[in-house]
Image (cartoon, rainbow, N blue to C red; front, side):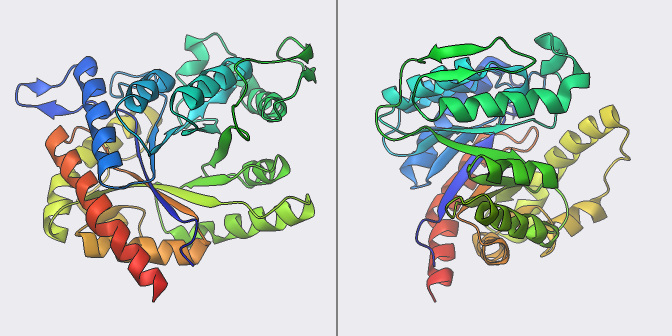
Length: 344
């Protein structure tokens, strides 16, 4: 049952607290590389860095960070979480990741999505009124690029291509690509239409709410005559020696992050009781001891039929040393326990 199941971790390069206060983004980026090296050493399967353009997240150029990580690691997959394809050029995205794939000996993967933040639209001169159309058109072109053959393509929002080869080509096979979905049935259908694996971003509420999406995805794959493809989940969490320690370490940083974003979007401040619900068996936070987190992952994996679980291990300003401990426990304790329980 666990064949093909993988364990990943994601970070946006959350700006952390250090001994002298908030760390500069440059230091955070260096720490992300160290975190990835540890993730590789403890046997995790994938490391994802997400693209943002904000003061509270340091990673705006995922491929550059991943290239630095590639030079320090030997086996872990290196991906984006996510690449905001709507406000990028599909050809350049393909070239950057095909280059990463070459220098890492085939370890690159790209997770494309629309993103939950919109700062990249004004930053790169895109009109928010084209939010849906931009992603649909650019994913259509990116799917053509994945074929590895000369591309002839035309759309409405980008210049056409005529029998254009894009370099460097993928050395072996194709570029590993996922589509990230936050809760839109149309996005699930779109991923199935293009025959691309699916990542469900579950950042609030019960995983049970997403069973319909996993079922819809499999139904659409069959309808579009596509092979069975992996489904993964991206969810936040934190691991420490005990449940209480993990929650006490995470709470102030998680609350600060959520309330900062909430203030921008008109949400009410989150309460400790809300946090406790999300940290419970039916919530989206995978926080606790290795045993608690492992059992919750097992439940989610069985419920949705997952091939990958990606823990967003960085959530707010939690210090670097606590993130390193969480990563170590995830790789050395949680992952083996999940595999053992699924093999029973």
